[in-house]
Length: 310
Image (cartoon, rainbow, N blue to C red; front, side, top):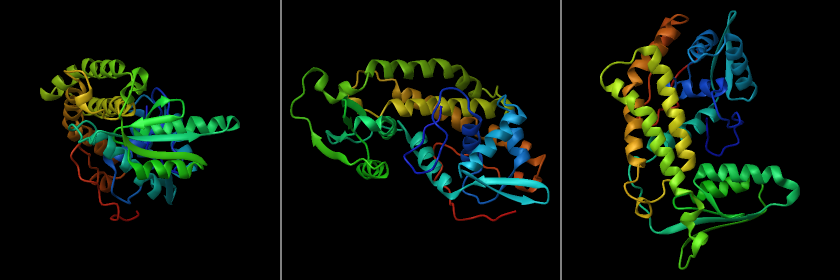
């Protein structure tokens, strides 16, 4: 399941399960970022077939992304090439940074909570759904129906979200709690036990893979698929946990252990997955294949001003 930071870019709707549109964006993010070079359409189609997509569904996904203005096309003779649009690239870079930096350490917390209060008329139920969905991605949860709280949410991103959606009645506060009883405790906005259980499930599912990675037991084709799968699973945890301060949580808290596992798999499989992507692109354009690069959890943001067209 994909999740993206708030933006005016028309990303595919979040859903459970594999989605070829999300896979295309993920492949660009992980192996073709920071360049203005276009990739051959045929290479993208073949890459998607690595994930059990048919060629027809792969072509349809690429076409839909182009209609959403997430990909832009150029033609050389009868061949079509694609790259991400600048707006999509910027939004995906924000998401990438949040995903790979998530739970890298216990974030400093001053004891205050960012609080959003908003009111939306009943006839705008769809807008209410969008607000709630995007507030969750920013790290908020509902303390009461229209009172959402977060320990770390960025004030400017929150205001930008509310203004971009045209929410006419809203207040953003940053304050300490001086009294809280029962469900009025901001921490009660999250099901802490359920979040811990999701971390434990992530660890149980992917720990055998980390063992195989560390012992060189994963091939390039499997590495490409497994690396994408573990990143998608980790992204789901990012949408559940706003990096609640560890001092408020039961011990031992499994978040940091899960983060170490994610980093070990994502970084450990990077060179192997890159080799598979490079191999597939080389069948269609050997010169472009040499530009393939994998990202890591410690990669610096790419320079998005370099590159050229084919």
